[in-house]
Image (tube, rainbow, N blue to C red):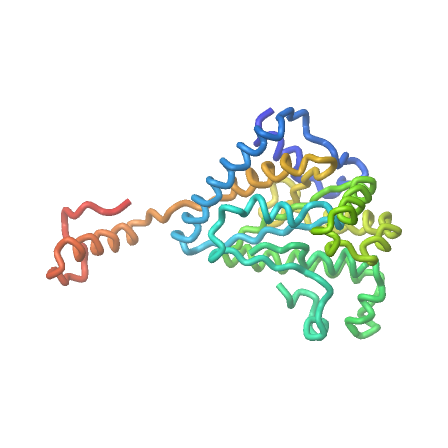
Length: 299
């Protein structure tokens, strides 16, 4: 099966019919490759991403926002660590959305806005499941009604439209992990000294709220996905993360990011400027403002 066809199966193009319970977190779409082959595919994808970053920088017009959203232990850090290992760090900013500071709580929920390890979607997920978090935001009581989550999703869509209209390509990934797999990964963190710091009692307590989290994710994804054929930003891509197949979906996400590429600028104006640069390097005494006729442009 071609990776492009796999990507289509994981895109959420019909948000009105989306239900998390309909999707197996361990699904691989019949793609049978071993770990060594997946590592080779990942390495090729990373090399491609590095080249595309150069194009993006050279173009100077577009930016890219990658949103990684998931339950604890789904593998968000692993995606960033492995898939972005070949990216120039000067051109990437990673923002991790933890518990908001007092300064952040004093602003609206979209104020703290690269790559989002978790994201602004926490405000319609974790905050929805934990009413005490919403209470700390000290909103006027008249504004905290039954429609607040639908209204916040509408605000998020407007925020993402604003980014898209100003040249930001938005790629959103939901890393789908099962409750049993999360328990397994939590136990592995306890057994491995280097990873114990990642697990808190709050993470364990949140497991009791799993059904509420799934309802929140269902509604957030449905309300903020783009139906197929509509020209607005923000289709979610659902990535499998279950079992020991982290290497599989890292390669999958790398492939998805590679498809969202920019090209090196090829405008006539840029060619003319490059021709002038060549002339001034080859003939330092030439001070003409316009490029010389017959000068071979840099492409």
